[in-house]
Length: 151
Image (cartoon, rainbow, N blue to C red; front, side):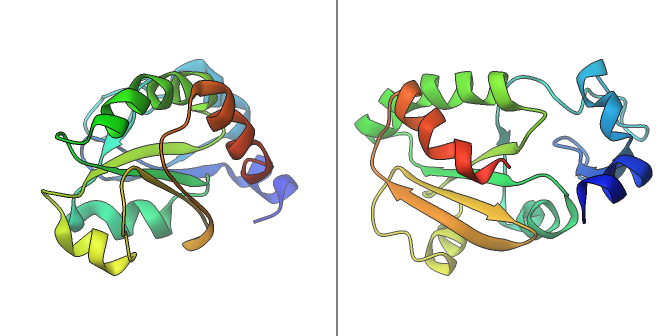
């Protein structure tokens, strides 16, 4: 979707709570939009926890890029990177959807995307993988890696 079309028709977002697809005018993204179905904020300043059941809807139905952190609770580098991923989410939440997939709880997603080590970040746009980065990053490195994928 071109930026002029998106501005005219609005952007489709998938609610992180009820997984409803919501259309929001692009110029209202910074105004704290809420899901009309479940009434939760669409942008809450933290990543969405994705399950196998909800993953494809978030991947294919949202117009913003989807940035997914594949991680596990026992992984030291994952825990080290988590606050940086949270901060990137807060700073860029209206430019991309940020999500986390617990590789232990969702092994089929890890297998589907060939996750060999964690943390692994994958950037998707229009349902297609556009970038991948394995290993922990600090906030500066994370923002630098994300920048070209948010245009």
